[in-house]
Image (cartoon, rainbow, N blue to C red; front, side, top):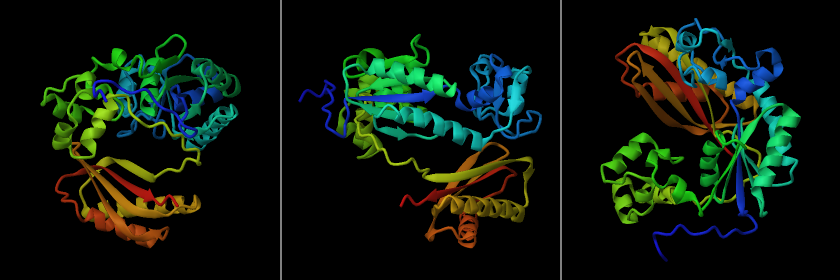
Length: 358
């Protein structure tokens, strides 16, 4: 087999010819505008309790109008206010987003193709047909007509290509774009590896140190070299990503979150170790009650500590058994926290529970 050629997909009954990646536009902000039509066309920023003057709150999402001012997810709300003082700032409303997401997924399932849900605002459809663009347009129209929300659709012969195609669909006039083995290298070949879904800037920097500077370079790299540089699993997988990926199977089981987490950025830094431990314990107990209400169990507990200098560490520990017992989960969180060497003021704490899937 010619290692320089990316093979055509060979679909089976559970591996459809085409994957359609549906990605909602600025979902949280769009849901807020839908129930407040007077905000349409205005910059809208969603995050925290909606008060941009409160310190240490961050943007969850911003409408395209707000993004034009440089506002983006993860930005401190106070900075967003400085960039766009005329924006409308709104608190996050998770139940509203759950309900809107259920509406969208219902529309996608109404087409009769298998649907794999990826959180609130994106999903894959698997289709066996010769005209995926026609279906993509029908999906876009139905979503907008039946929910009032808009989306872009990426089409690919693998999930990875479909996901990457959505990036181009966001700016395409039809809001639809196809990436497959026929145009993959033409479109992506000269891009830096960090442009690929699943490859970050640190990995790209390590590749660059070995003169792997483009997607084409990575697609043609020797798998043994990659295994030596990144390990026997990650290394060869990077080359697969550069060749457009290999995932084609749609999983239609109901989407289950693999974890549940909570973070708190404090108005003033914490320095008392007992107070820090109490905050972590409280978050662990609250999360435990939430997963219990969802009928889930925790298997691991993770703790995030961010200091005043923004140095961030995450540590995780396994619980004695899958449980919803708040005493066990709290004890596990406290045990993980004790593994940190906290010698600077703490600005943020977080707790994450990894959940059993069975």
